[in-house]
Amino acid sequence: MTTTDIAATDVAIEVKGLSKSFEGREVVHDLSMRVKRGSIYGFLGPNGSGKTTTIRMLCGLLTPDSGEGTCLGYDIRRDADKIKRHVGYMTQRFSLYQDLSVRENLEFVARLYGVADARTAAREMIKRLGLSGREEQLAGQLSGGWKQRLALGACTLPNPQLLLLDEPTAGVDPKARREFWNEIHDLAGEGLTVLVSTHYMDEAERCHEIAYIAYGHLLARGTVEDVIAGSKLATWVVTGDGLNALAHQLTGKPGVDMVAPFGTSLHVSGRDHDALEASIAPFRSDPKQHWQHGAPSLEDVFIELMSRSKDNFQ
Ligand SMILES: Nc1ncnc2c1ncn2[C@@H]1O[C@H](COP(=O)(O)OP(=O)(O)OP(=O)(O)O)[C@@H](O)[C@H]1O
Ligand SMILES: [Mg+2]
Image 1 (cartoon, rainbow, N blue to C red):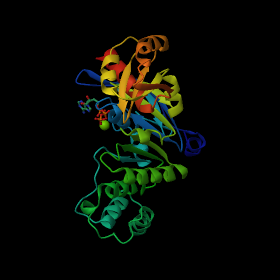
Image 2 (cartoon, rainbow, N blue to C red; image 1 turned 135 degrees about the vertical axis):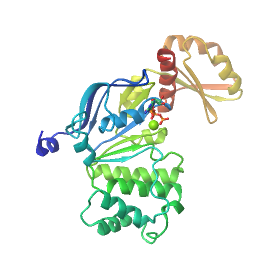
Image 3 (cartoon, rainbow, N blue to C red; image 1 turned 120 degrees about the vertical axis):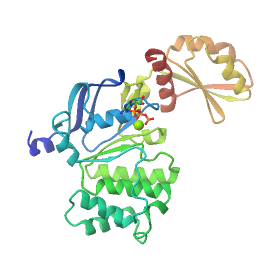
Image 4 (cartoon, protein in one colour; image 1 turned 45 degrees about the vertical axis):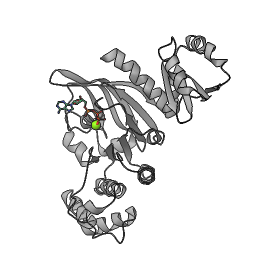
């Protein structure tokens, strides 16, 4: 494929049937996905479910045992070197050189990647990040949120076409996470494709598309609306007194797949709507509580998917 062909296609990543085992244990199973250029694609799933392993296979850092595909038009098995030139990868728990200043970190990265005028590129990035005036501050002294933004800046300095961000905002406060995500949206608006893994639901909701992976299996994908609709979950929202006792009474009843407290309400969900209705019927006449139909939240859907997959795969 020539560069023009690549630019012409609207697909950044397309892989089919990726599998990977470590020490005889399969940690990614038959995974297929497609990511559109210029989109923000979220990767969600419990710890140890294969998100990082998948990200590493997508950019050619790790060879799959089976499966195939392309990243930015390049073959993930044969063209790893070419892929790496166009990818910015912020690894999990990524941190910059703590004892170098903001400016030194950016200039170092720019030189490492052969950016033509490293000093100017670093200066422009500092401005873009809103770090003017803090150029000489050591990276290690920045707040967690600023560290992550600086790391994002460093990843984008070499002008990649694809950003792989592996839990970039873990442990960062909500305001800083929001700012980080505003920057991700700006980058996507400029044409960059972003694949990002996260455990935060609010971040999942800011993605154009998401994929949910559990125990190596991709269980759901699409827009947030697609994933919620595809779950076929019926959800009841209960408010009032005695919710804790109610939760215990409902757990394990036929049709009740999930009972989860959300602040001052209780979410009761299930996929078999008739069985769910039958099980909750005796409780709905209790005047202490008020029941109403609710839309399942993304978190409801993920918790349900996770509990189901645990039974299936373990
Ligand atoms: N190089 C390796 N050698 C052996 N096992 C590995 C290796 N890399 C990953 N694993 C195992 O593969 C499984 C999937 O790991 P992976 O890091 O991809 O999960 P993850 O979804 O990124 O989890 P987390 O949310 O905790 O980051 C885990 O059980 C992990 O211990
Ligand atoms: Mg990981």
